[in-house]
Image (cartoon, rainbow, N blue to C red; front, side, top):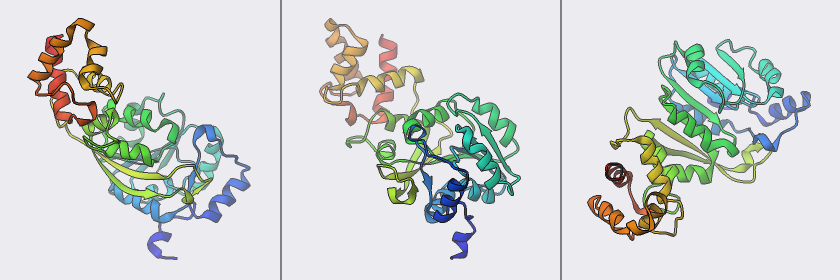
Length: 296
């Protein structure tokens, strides 16, 4: 085996993964989106994209049996792995026993105080990145929690459903562009790293995956006077994709007799009322939300 690949550990080797799962009598739960990666080339691409230095920390969400945790532990100063499935904790304690820089926490990442956990376990690290193979059913809530809580993160490198990755990385005028695209680009610079076929997982999922890198911005690319209102406007504009931005905003923010008032606001923002939400850039949404905020 190529030394570079071997250095990423053997937990992820297909036979090793099957042996661990079988020996512990572990059964996969579809409800938790459990699919274990068994491809060291993909693992290498994930870890390399995270750009971890020897003084950096990694937060992993859903470590499974430790396939990704192992190479992270070899690259980073410290790894905090959050696992929701109690059945996997003793397995992780075994597979990662030789890595003293790994801390395993049992819990639901959507309910845990991540800021406190990062300070407690990764506080001495120079920079912290999230690196994970996320469960598909909670991908968007997890990513948005990481971003909205404004955690001190450098990168978020995650393997997710390809369809969701396309939505996160898409720009105006494309079929995948939507409120999620704008939210991600507000907080991050998104970049698709690689496409991952369903054949490199045990068990195989029903869809293909993708690795996406979200480089967290120091500051948003636009200035908005009220972030919550900005995102409210964005959500409203995409409420019904086939409707014009004027009709969607009218239904959400204005009364039936206020179309002329809305059209005046859109004109001030330089937006044609017959355009649809997917044609507006983040700059246009920022300008529109600021004008609407002052007008309502």
